[in-house]
Image 1 (cartoon, rainbow, N blue to C red):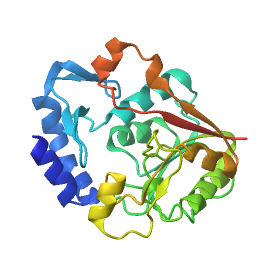
Image 2: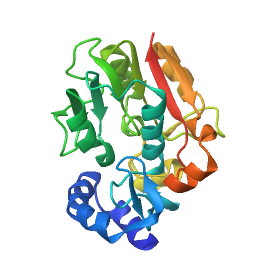
Image 3: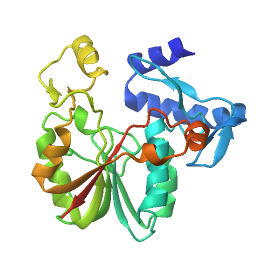
Length: 254
């Protein structure tokens, strides 16, 4: 199974995998039904979570019924328990919408807009560095694991700040090496093998360091790096398989 997952991730484009996975999801949801793990997003239990990762595969990472990863399940718990996100009247902008969230959010929110440069399922195809939205438009923005793909990430951060309402919240997760103070930027590296070696994925342009949070603050955001995993009980970490979920950068427009 590990070999198959690694092969699929490295051979096919993200858009192709999204389209193909939609065909298999109903089958996986039934075939892997069980009691070992639970996905809080759909509140269903499974006998098995798939391994996942472009280089180093993580055990029990991908839910077969929703295709959620550890960070998605942790974010769901955080938004549900700690924020006012789940209010139907909130105006929400979601970049590169994850399958595990998309269907639920689309029916729950009265004004939910999805956007991406290439995704086949979004409402608005747009460049994050030049967004077609008015200033101060959104109560919440979800932009997770997008900026590492963007050549001019500073301009993208400024755009996110521009379109967020005052006191609005943006969740802007990226891959971070917490052992490094500075971001390793390789936006001009075109060799996929070198990108994979340096940044952990062939289509990543950088690996962020701890200076990422200062970059957000310099744009104007109030930033809290929410270590929500640290307050989750061991029972829930096991139940939801959250051990590699990371932290949640919560950005407020002040």
